[in-house]
Image (cartoon, rainbow, N blue to C red; front, side, top):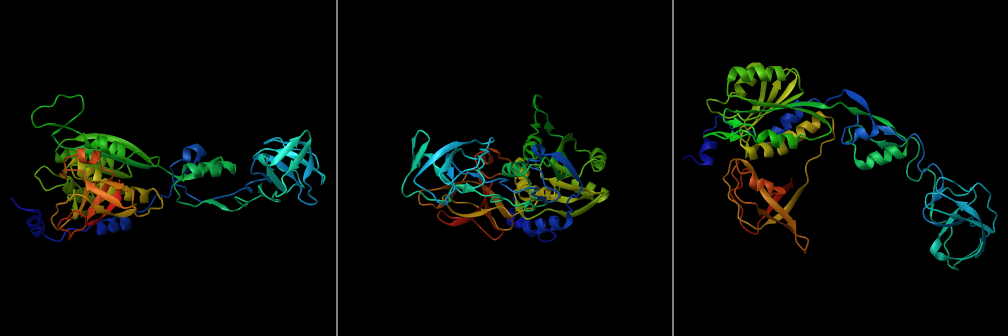
Length: 409
C-alpha cells in the first residue's frame, strides 16, 4: 500500500496549498450588492448594505445615572428641601431654587438647573428635609446629552454583521428599518449510489446520508436562503442535468462526494464541461479532493464524500467564502498556541486539521489533546472536539510537550 508521501510524489503537479486556495477563492468571488429593506428585528445576523447614522443625540436629555436626589451645586448647603419627584418617563416640571432638591430615579430627566445627583444611600431623610453627608461630591452621576452618541455619528458601518448589541443601539436611536444585503441562495446535494435516507432499512453496502444533515447545520445563517437538493445518483447525465438546472436557481451550489478520481466520480468532469474549474485538489487533510469553480454565474464547491472532510473543508474553505459573498467583513479566525499533551502522527505533504480538545489550566497556559482517531470517516472525534490542531505541510508529527497552533471550532 502506498504511503501518503508516495501518493504526493506521483501528483502531476504540486497540490495547491490551503492558503493559495483561499486566496484564489477570495480573488474569484464578487460579493453581492443587491439589498433589501427589513424591519430591525429581522436584521439580526444580516449584513448591512450601507452605514447607519444617528438621527438624534443619545441620551436625548440630561438624566440621572442612579436613584437619589438632584440639585444645583451652586450655593449648595448640607440640608435641602425636597420639592418633588422626577420619575423615568415623568419628569419634574418645576424650577429648583438653590435650597431645594428633587427625588430622582435612574434614567429620569434632570430639572433644567440641576447638575448633581447624590445616591439615596448617602442622605438622611427627615420629612421634606434632606441632609447630605459632609463629603458629598458635586456635579456627579449625571448623563449628559449626546454622551453616548452625537447626531450624525456612524452607529454601524456598511458590511457589518448586525449583532444583538447593534439591535439595541439602533433601537435606542429610533431606527425602525435597515438596508441589508439580500440573502445568498444556496443549494446543497449529496452524490452517491450508496446513500439512503433516514427511515430506510440499510442493505449490504448502503449507508445513511449524514452529509446533508451536517451541511444543514453548517448552513444555518440568517444571511443564507438554503435548499436541500437531496441525493443524486452516480450517473453522469443525471448529475449534469440536476446541477446545470441548479446553477440557474442558486448563487452557490455545494455537493458532497464524487469529487475524487474514481470511475464514478463525475463532479470535475461536469464542471469542466458545463462551467470552469478554478482548482481541484488541495494540500489539506482531510479533504484533498475539493473542487471550486463556476457554472455560469453560480459558484460551485465540490466537497469530498467522507463526513469529516465535509465539515473540515466547510469550516476552512467554504465558510469564509460564503461570508465574503454576503458582503460581510471577513476576518481570519483566531489562532492560539497550545502545549500538546498527546503525541500526534502525521506525514509530510498536506496541511492537517486534526480534531482536538483545548482547555486552559490554572496557570493560564493552553493545553490541547487529540480527541482520538483521525480518520476522515470518524465523526465521533469531531463530536467531542472544540478545536482544530493545525499541522503545517512540512510537519512530520508532534511529541508530547511541543507547542502547536489551534483554531477554535
